[in-house]
Image 1 (cartoon, rainbow, N blue to C red):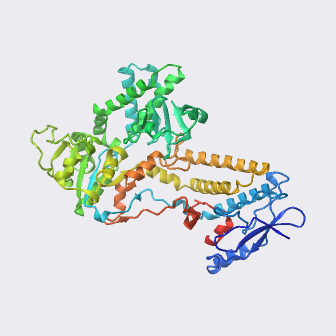
Image 2: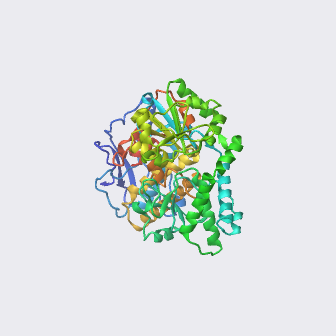
Image 3: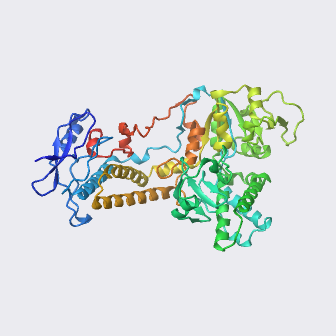
Length: 594
């Protein structure tokens, strides 16, 4: 019998499996051929067992005459693969049950994915770990700098409700917005950080690193906008050009990116007010609405309302204060210099630090700079430092040196560098806002940067669940099947591929909903990094859920980022197969590494 050309092509070996025609029935059978692939030999008893499994008698493809319910049992472990790489791809073979062959590969792959996830695999990531984008040795860091809000001080979600309610009431009482808005309350978990807002369309959406809107994550008000409408809004595409999206700090001519954790109540208020106007068919000017809400939110901060709430009830709003003390005290004990640069006023910072660290907190810091006006602090040379006393009174004398124990207001980084001499990679600065805290320091001044991402802890706990791990692994395997089997273009095979595509989309949606039903993960769209994630990688050497993660590492620890494969390297990375990131997910190619 002549063999049909569906041999699995392995790089450099003559091994593999052949599909051949059975005795006149038109069916296919598997025939094993010898393998010369390095690593195919046994590794003790486990390797011998795999070799025996590889030599089991082959099965014919399943009969499909009775529909999916009558599919045969799993094919053998030696099932064939289409050619790999850029080798010629065989087309459909006349008289061959390609539909049965496709479903056989599907079931074989599903079993393999199940076998690839042993017990305990779902606890791989540590929420308290520090993750590196760039190689950095803490032993080289002599000076540690910190932002205050959401860096040294972590706040409870109760603060978001207070900001939302107060800004909503300002809109009603001062801007004369409808009284009916009072029925709206803050919705925890509605929005996520890093979203973009199109001012002229009142559209809140998630955009990936390539400037494409992730379909299913665009909202007007509190309701999702159908995918086709989103595409129509942007001229028949999901893509938004860079010049429309943002300037360097995420504020474009018509589209703003929300990068601050404090922006969660602002996004929710924008959506709630828009929802009210749309529900009641009230015409409104989108630009006025955006500006009014931005100003109302700004009032909560600028007029000190938020500061008063926190100062009045520290226990209610401030989290993990003892960990903040432990981090700072440990660094000082290892002879590291510390400084603080924050936009918050001194009286607020002073009360918070006394609560977390103690009355002598300033003894830990070599420099304390408040109301710094970041990001202008890093770029504008015009504002000089001013010394202030503990009552907040400003001194008029010229600053020729920055003294330990003193408090300084405003200033600029250029004078800071001149007066301290603290330059380059011996300085590591931590902040939560990628633009205002980290971008200029990384790109213009060569400091090392650490991003504080509180959402990381929750996202890692979700990633560690069995549901997510199995969904992701099967999704990757199914994607590989779709990629490799699209050569079959007969009507029945196309229907199978469509079913797989539908299943893949359902898995993607379910995985997204595990993080946030509206917008998913802050780090990923379905498969690409988000715009936020791309900026996180660009502007931070390391990132973590809180500064307390530093307690898990020696002060001389070196962080080594893992070499992850580029797309053209992916098939060479065998460890990718074991984590479900399968570029060529077929059993014959994988059996030797399991």
